[in-house]
Image (tube, one colour):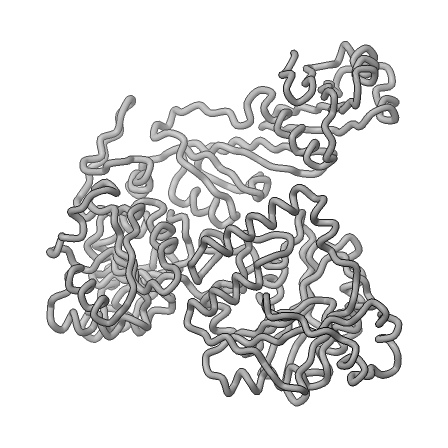
Length: 628
């Protein structure tokens, strides 16, 4: 396989072929002597043939994401980089024109800049420089230089480049961000927090030009959902100080992404069997478990593929840290029980310049307890730290046999290393006996069974969970030991959402939910719980809200009609007022309704009188309530 210096990813949706042709051709010409690749990501275009034809013409890698209800530049770029093989990852847009050898110059700057993220200021072309002008035999680059306007450095320019290693450690762009706005600035800020230098390439031979087109922001201002997405993006950018993202779910990851956390057991597998089962049910699944080779002799096969046996000359924590692939290290030897969101709560605090996170919820203490930090007898278990930064400190502590939390904090402060307390991260060092009764559960020192219920599953106590997420429909037909009930809702034939209940779930059942990208929450600790997803008329009201958001006008009334009851020519009313079909499937049952949205009383009376025998219920206006 040929070694690649650089991978360039372009993500787009419903983009014209002419402009995309120009962008791709210019990028390939800008590689110079580099071995580079261009990866196209068609993220939900209505016409997928455009991307296919361009990929074939220029011999490009192509990622086509068809199941993309909303545009997300973050997800599109991640889908492209999941296929990338270059040392340097470059993101740009489908409306950027690269001058010859520009990327070759960017690569040279990156090689000479140490650990850095590279940016290049964009020059905006005027409206009178058309796509037809640029599509001629040869581009006059000097002319473009003379008529273009240099864009200020308020963002990341029109190009951002970062090493493959850094991208993998940061786990790509934040996939919570949709539409446009802040995703590139957020990524750059995270790179800076990770310790990379921010370098703007200032070289006359390195130029990128933005090809003029009508601004997309005009359409977004009138789109309620887009405005909401932009506001969410801004909040993530301003409030989330963490470096590694997509922690609970990474939709468009590479085939074998690096783990975020390396969990270390110095005392082997047998002493931690229950805890390993609990780890498998964490809300964060991107971790590896490091165990000394000599401590696994009692196991014929490992209970989880994330367990790695590593050499440890003396069985110490320090001797195992060098084998850790995760950015963060978490020693757990001696811990008996952890809350299901333990890793998530710890990682949430690993932001900014923080290099050490100490679990605040210990031994079932409340978050307000002041006694936690004075517990000098506790070993450094359950505390997460950046492995490369603190490996030497750990080695020194173990050699001096002073590995207590107070001494670790003292040395961290002495070396100006920032640390923080994760008050919401609970774990227990005491043995627990769980006794399940019909009416109650006694869990010894466990203060909140909602936090520690994975302990019961680890001990083969079956529970019931409510399942959520976009992928519930994928569970239909999947073999599970528990009893699964699935309820799905669609609007005009398009799947909208699902809800489901899994009774008597086992550990393997819950891991199957994980593997299908489903989220779940415990609904009751008793196996005989009775929960019916999407009860009553609530599903229809929820569907109506989604339809109203889409049409962006307020109806006078919403009339819900049972489509299974024959009425004379109900479809003829579609020409009179807006209508939409909603469907709900729940096990063997099936509900099929049609909603008529009227603009005034006259339309409302016409529909109601025409379909009176099949009307289920009527919603009058926004403030007038529901009439059955």
